[in-house]
Amino acid sequence: MQIERLTCALGAEISGIRLAEAATNDDLAGALEAALLEHKVLFLRDQDMTDAEHAGVARRFGELEDHPLTSSVDGEPGIIHIWKSPESPPERYENSWHHDATWRECPPMGAVLRCLECPPVGGDTMWANMELAWERLPDHIKEDIADLRARHSMESVFMAAKPIEERLAMKERFPDPEHPVVRTHPVTGRKSLMLGAFATHFTNHHTASRVRFGQDAAPGRNDLMNYLLSQATIPEYQLRWRWKPGSVAIWDNRCTQHYAVMDYPPCVRRMNRATIKGDRPF
Image 1 (cartoon, rainbow, N blue to C red):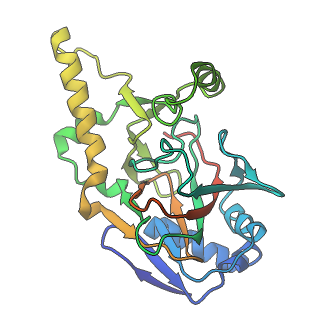
Image 2 (cartoon, one colour; image 1 turned 60 degrees about the vertical axis):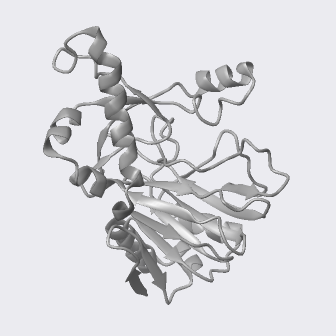
């Protein structure tokens, strides 16, 4: 197995292996897990896999979960379709920086995404290293956000266009959780910035140490939220991956954000994804 770094911030391309063999090869699965912890996102080209093999590889990292709004592939629980075409509804955009499913009490550990069909140009995906984003914050910002927590919600993002009955029913099923703004990786112990498109507001910002008068509250929290959200957009923390059929990406959702670039209509882009269950952030 060969490993080639792709940027100074994160990401590595793996070659010399057939990824599907990791489903049954303990040594290969262990090497991939170690590489993922080091590089945060792994990429492979020219991988011919069935949905069953795809799910088998993903399960080496943990149990798979389903998305409440996207059905699993027939006969293979845990694999969902992310398929776009010229006929797709216009509101089904993807382009926002986010950690996957932070609207869950326990967001995913990561995911394995496989490209079946993509535009000849466009439709790239970008990732950002949120450990690096935290490390390079000014010290006074680190001190201020060390104990901050934030509410996360699907209601304010992809559920917003749904009928009110459906939106409220989904919110009852998945109550908006509260997560730390600075997360500790459960394996490496490294800290990272955990804010993205699903974060709506800080839950414990309005304290005497931050707010002198009520007039301080809104600009103070909003400016800080926007500043922290903007960290994922810094190029020095990023990687951009160009898809080809047979390409696969494996990422650690605990310490990265990603952004699917929606620059390709009216083209077809067909991706299959396995999402791996994670732990409650701390």
